[in-house]
Image (cartoon, rainbow, N blue to C red; front, side, top):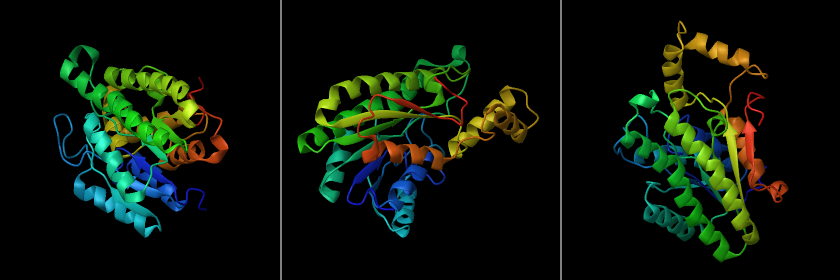
Length: 277
């Protein structure tokens, strides 16, 4: 398959092995796209080395995409900084000539604690990355797409937590709910530029981040171990399993395809039937 041959896609937060961003890029690489691996590159406050894609790991992810037969480059970016987001778009356009698909995947999902113990600084960290980062990247990408005049696709990786509340994840749920508002409003404004804006809302996916969430919530909910927690999660899902990166990648590929040209402003559940609104 090569439906994205000649197309360029950026996925933020994609610089980690076994991450959701890497899984999304693998699908696009397999279908011929020019792939841009983007992550913050170096540790920052609330973003330690075990939570981010380092510059070296980003290069490894890009090399794996090249070995799959795709074209790839790395573009480190702190999505909290609008100037850095614009610089990323400029670098990608200089390298590949254009940008067609912007996927906002960067996020903090590892700050888990009760509301009454969550600091204002932790709240800001999550909102700044998950929601403001998506805004900055959307704006920079949309400027290029509109100026180019050939339309484009913007896809926000939201969450089941964009539609339902969960304990000990108030900043995360708030940021993802906000991402749906960003998606809908941007879709209305950008439709005249032939730019669609949609969101994908996965349920739990056991990536590296997912493993941290599994450990935390297995303990919080009193399960004997993580496997018992996962078995309970699978039993509650109509499809009998949790999500895979390939499930989310497939949804992104469809939203980015010509078949979805008339779909915009949607928040698509990809949850095996667990989330239906």
